[in-house]
Amino acid sequence: MAVKMSKKATSIDMTAMCDVSFLLLTFFILTATAKVPEAMPVDMPSSTVQSKLPESNLATITIGKGKVFFDLKGKQVRIQALEKMAEKYGVEFTEEDKKEFSLMEGFGVPIGNLKQIIEMKSADRTKADQPGVPKDSLDNQLAEWVQFARLANFDVNDKELEIAIKGDAKEEYPSIRKVMDILQDQGINSFSLVTGLRGKDF
Amino acid sequence: MAELNTGDGGGGKEKKIRSKKQNSKVDLTAMVDLAFLLITFFMLTTTLSKPKAMELGLPDKEKPNEKPADIKVDENRTMTIMLGDNNKLIRYVGLLATPVVGGAPKQFTYGKEGIRKELISRKVSVLAYSTAKGKPKNGMIVIIKPSKKSNYRNLIDILDEMGIVEVPTYAIVNEFSPEETKLLEGK
Image (cartoon, rainbow over all chains, first blue to last red; front, side, top):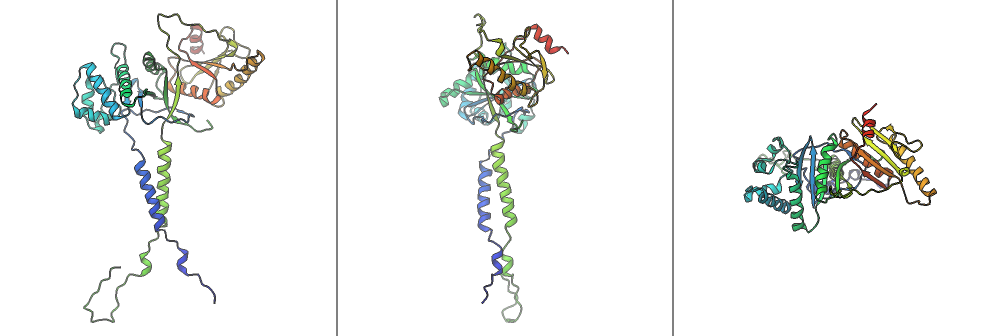
């Protein structure tokens, strides 16, 4: 008797495979962090550096079009830094404001206008023409922010805050230099420059 | 499968509407293909889009009331790179007034074919020079001078170049002598 292959065997049951693949897909979608809308999108220059930017314990100073934006990681750190700034400049923030501030993206306004920005919807914030954090020698709020962020981070995480500078590729050197000077005035001599990735054979 | 009986059982010989058994199996191949494609996409985008961080250490800032410390450096080991506007890049080796042989001010381009070749060849010759003097650990020193008109991309490019070529010592200096400014603005 000739053994006949049954016709069914030619098609494999894909159900289990489909289950597994969708499970993995769900996992990757959920673990992928949603891209936080940036207050000021910048075109980062690329480099061949491989080391990644830390996820926490970090303050990012974004420089573009002559304006400076400040961003801080960690909810508790943000709240504490805001409280210290509010105390220094005598601005009142409600508990809701603080909570909203802990969740929002970077900002680029003087401390007096920060409340307005906090009360906006997140879609409006990007549209709002934020003038940048003041960094002149007369009104150097950026230096204060960095200082208080470091103090707050030391209280919360018991670690020195890392500073990253994220500059636009077309930004002229003096404005980058200005920010570096502010950092160096506080004794921060080591910081990261945020770049994109470039191919190996550059 | 759900069956729908019409009539009241009397007509046993009537044809029942049955769904064929074969139809119950859907071909999932295409669906699996799609799922894996999406998995690949999400895996790659989550890991690749992370921004990279270039570490930069600067020396302590000089206090205005302190006398700046003069550090004597062998001019045969130094290369000065000046960054100008419109991606202009001029380098000289040694002192500007008395450059080392073959090290007169010259314009280069960024990247593989430009400044990198020069850096690599100069690195080798500096190492040969130091070894001849009995100090093989003294490598090349590069002084980067970004002018006011240079942009951030230029700075990152040249710092990246330092990493690629593995220049042991490099520094960012902001002071320009009048001759250097003239050189950068001329031509």
